[in-house]
Length: 180
Image 1 (tube, one colour):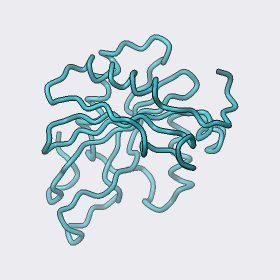
Image 2 (tube, rainbow, N blue to C red; image 1 turned 120 degrees about the vertical axis):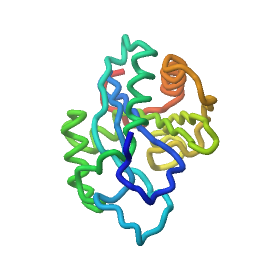
Image 3 (cartoon, rainbow, N blue to C red; image 1 turned 30 degrees about the horizontal axis):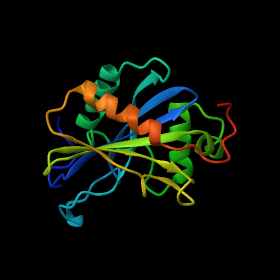
Image 4 (cartoon, rainbow, N blue to C red; image 1 turned 180 degrees about the vertical axis):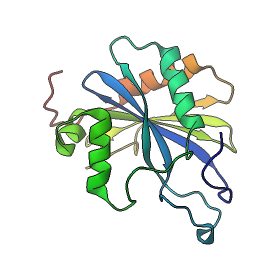
């Protein structure tokens, strides 16, 4: 897959999966910046959401299908820019709202769980990280959560199984308002 940058030395591929209202939303990501500038160097930029890659029913998702969709999202990492300006948080939130269908960003943040999947190119490993949603620190992210590490060459089903195990660990916000 042709990435947007000919000068970036890619270190990783990244995707985020959200669980919201009994669905899994796989998000394809890209380096931050709608236009990449060679003058900024060869280091890989941080990532942001570029496209909705796939949606699955969380109650009966097939791990092989889930893992396959995640592998496709990783393969498409940085093949298109994010569809909003880098510093335009309201536009970013509107874009995510269109993909996921929540009423407002606060409602989404309180009622979702997340997992990230990173493929470390040099180490040839997949890192699956469940998110803590305001249960360890006052923000959403993988800090302080256990990682699931998978070696290169694992099957799509093994990746899907690891993501489902990570969702068992991922936490909801203590102020969750959706029925459990």
